[in-house]
Amino acid sequence: LTLTLTLTLTLTLVPTLAAEQEPLPEGLPHKYQQYCDTTPEERDVVWAAAMASLKAAGLNRGRQGTYATWRGHFPGANPQTNYGIGWMSGPSPRGYQAWLAKNTKEGIPLDKTWGVAPTDKVSFFLSRQDAYVALGCTPPELGYFHMKIGTGVRRYPLHMPSVLLGDTVNNANVNTTMGSHGSAPYNATYLYIGTADDETYSRIVAAFAAAGLPAQAANRDVIPAGQWVRFLRDGAGSEATWNEDEADSLTILGRYSGFADKRQYEWLSTGCRAGLVHATADYAAQVEPRTTTASPHAIARPKGNPATSELPLHGKLTELRAKLVSAMRAEGYEEVQTLIRKS
Image 1 (spheres, rainbow, N blue to C red):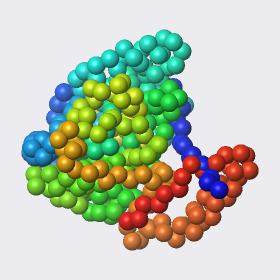
Image 2 (cartoon, rainbow, N blue to C red):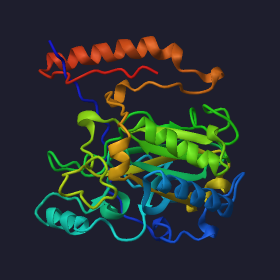
Image 3 (cartoon, rainbow, N blue to C red):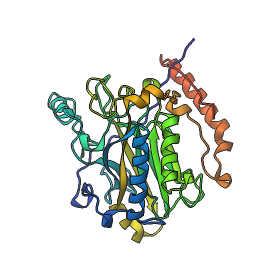
Image 4 (cartoon, rainbow, N blue to C red):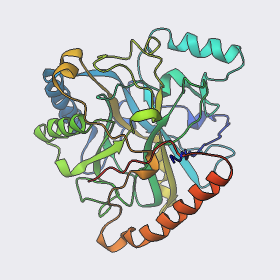
């Protein structure tokens, strides 16, 4: 008997942007960027060197932009929470904006993400061996923050679920230049890499380490492969084949809650450099994909530092999951697959 259970978290946000919530300028001048133990200028040098190294290895730079935060919160969402989002500069993939507008006109609202942000600017397409990369500073001390890639527009059935795919990178587990596994989560430099592929992750970490960024600052956001995401074809090399490949778009969402000092709230007017990395056809032909096909809720990795480990909760969470599977089975649902990734 094969059971199938799909767990999703759906965010329904229909806000109106105030003037102070408008996205940062696309060029992201340094005065709008984040400062911590590194400056924007220093990170630019590291970024350029790493991207050049990756290009030489067959991992090309795609659309670039910023991962930025908004000072205002979304009406209808937690009033104590502010949000971060990835904003892509330059033109979106050819035909994408028109396709979103056409479907919106025909009754499937896709042109605005969370009812406010232009979808073509805050979503992107990846193949299994591609990645979304951000290099910036973690916030000042606060109660909670996280970053996570989720679905933007899903093709089958056509809708915008706003589902986060698995574990977040958050203040309890983030790696920074100041410490690993949540031991030094604030006011420090971090590297964020969202990808489905183990080898792509390793090569991006190595490129940034060679450019001068400590490898301990790297964070893996696992994008689950399998039925969870319809990717671009392997070796697409860009987002150009998004429609032909019938790919799902992705987006990145951050949450920031409970600043220790209200004066540090000004940090929410800042952003950092971010962009896409695409595997070329030559790269895909030579490098075998090594993807994580586990369902998002089954991806396990260490959380917290030794003093704040969540491991004691494992038994209770296993019990909770078993009860949930049983309850859903009684309602007529089946679990498609359960795959545990062995670390």
